[in-house]
Image (tube, rainbow, N blue to C red):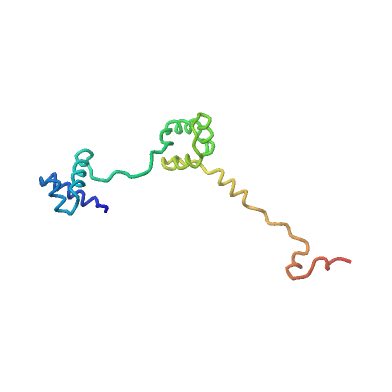
Length: 148
C-alpha cells in the first residue's frame, strides 16, 4: 500500500513536534511503526520524507557528458550519428539514438538534417502520361486505336 506524502508528513510531525513515539504515531494513523521510524530518520537526515527512486540504473552516457560537450563545442554542426562516430574514434561507443536522447534530456538537440533529406527523397514526380491512358480508363484497348 502506498502512503501519500501528506500522511507521511503528519506522522513525522506527530513524532517530532508532539513528542510521540514512532509506535504511538503509527497506531494513531494506522501505519506500521517501522515505517514511521524510517520516515523520521529520513527526515532528520535529508529534510524530507519523499520515497527514494526505484528501479532503473545509472545512465552510462552521463559519465561521458564532459567529453560530449567538448566535442560539440569544437564541432557544433555534428549530427547525432556523426557524434556517435566521433566518440567511437575516441574509444567510447554509444548509438546515435542513445546520444539523441541524452542531447534532448540536456536540451542540446541537434538539427535533423537527415530527416529533411529523407522527406525530400520520398517525394516522387508524377509519372509521365501513358499513351492511350485515357482510352484505357474508358475500357478501350490501345492496340485497336491508331493501328492499321
